[in-house]
Length: 275
Ligand code: NAP
Ligand code: MN
Picture 1 (cartoon, rainbow, N blue to C red):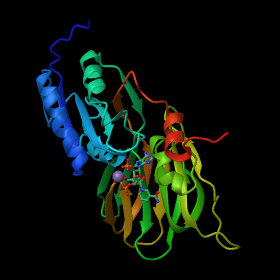
Picture 2: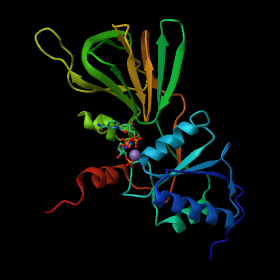
Picture 3: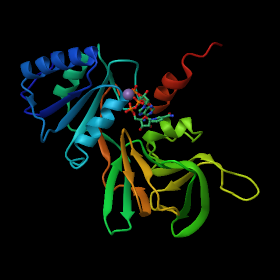
Picture 4: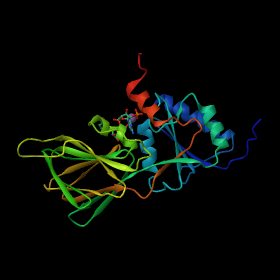
């Protein structure tokens, strides 16, 4: 028999409003209390998100300024997700793994976005999936600079820069490649670029290594919409935007039942293959 000790670990539980997630929230809260875990929603050691990948994005943003101190766990109340290691019927296994936990973690890159406004203000964001930019009404026109090289003048609906774990989200819908999350790189993907005799962009998405910086310089002083994961912002008079891999990574509790990335991709997009 395994000896269970008082862990003293501080845990925050975050759930979406779906009845099933709320049921899991109450059940898990109860089990954690009975097992001497401490519930703490300001400076936890472990954050458990209950819902889907979208809920894990919200949990990430709640703790985006404490990424080095926190480890995440995702519980999915639907199918298996990309940021979720447990299904809602696996709470026994989750609590047991928490009791046996020795602090091991799995870490993935995070995107850092700096929006420089013409009035000198700088808005800084972190994204777990991606940041996308569009011009509010008309065609977006922006210069794309990669590591100081003026690469192209983009015309079209917009551009996204995604992390490796975000590559299976919006990036994939735009025709971007799926990147294994141990590859520390960012992916720049076009949203409906104009390509004809006059206007020319690369057309395919590009993947830049950790040391490279992507800059976008919108050429129109108009409102642009910047989406960072599940949040939307609107800015006027953007001077430039810088995208780089953040100094901090997101850490997940390394679960003994951690599902391999390619299994997740297969589960989400392919399903079972008929031979
Ligand atoms: P949502 O509109 O409720 O959900 C978007 C879908 O994307 C959900 O099915 C979500 O899974 C899934 N998803 C989230 N992160 C993922 C990832 N890393 N890999 C694969 N699938 C992922 O919005 P949300 O739940 O708040 O998520 C925001 C994200 O939606 C954005 O970061 C963006 O990537 C994505 N999005 C996609 C499109 C598109 O594909 N055309 C357009 C806008 C936004 P769950 O059901 O498990 O939550
Ligand atoms: Mn969602």
